[in-house]
Image 1 (cartoon, rainbow, N blue to C red):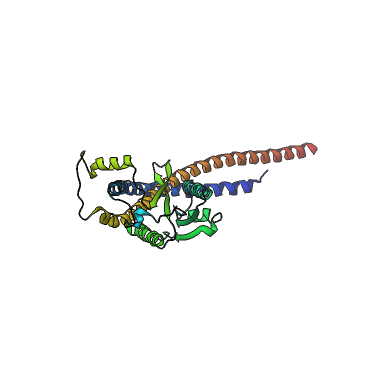
Image 2 (spheres, one colour):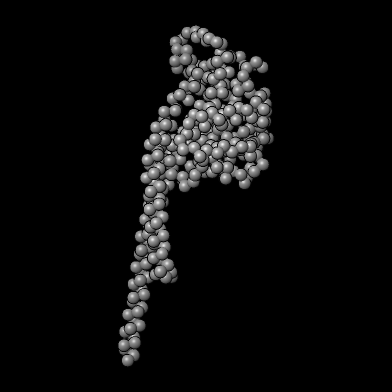
Length: 301
């Protein structure tokens, strides 16, 4: 049985930890509202950009003269997995869920005979995947010094990805992040960003009726032509999708951290109660033992 001193020290330690987790929960709750607003504000633009590209992609004939970001390299051998996670821990299962989705995709591609490489945004994903895929490491985008995410941060990553794509380092790029649903739910998402996936017939029809080419039988003329517009929009779309992923991750991270710290605070309270009960029982047992020894000594006299 632990001593009274060790129990008291442990209770004091758990109380200090509870104060820290409670403070972290309050900080995460304050940051969550701003991060959630930013993520929700970025969604319409990113989704509309995809709709515009779907409409334009349905109107062009993909061939040797098409932009490489749309036509692809003509191969499907080397896949680059862009894993976006956080720079800091204590965020519950947020990073683990994203890494698990990326690991499953990597295992599936490797089973199909593909070559898999990893591009990390955030050191937590890198720490979890580096042991298993050490030789597949390509680059780590460090955002630890960024206090507030901006479009320039996403543009820098997009430019690096495009440069590597044009240099022939990979054929397909997949982006992994967590879509924010609520403080309790963050959904891991896998999205192909390079080359831009061509829409199906149904998707093209949806894009045409979503205000891009409204009205049955209506004709939209583009100036300049569709291919020129695509050449300008495709690189920007990659930056937009990465920026959206970073904002979704920021909101998901704070939501997951708030939930995790709330659970930790509650668990610390339960542990304090259990330790206090044990401390009182041990103290009562020690007092009872001392009384028995005094009574026994008095009777012996």
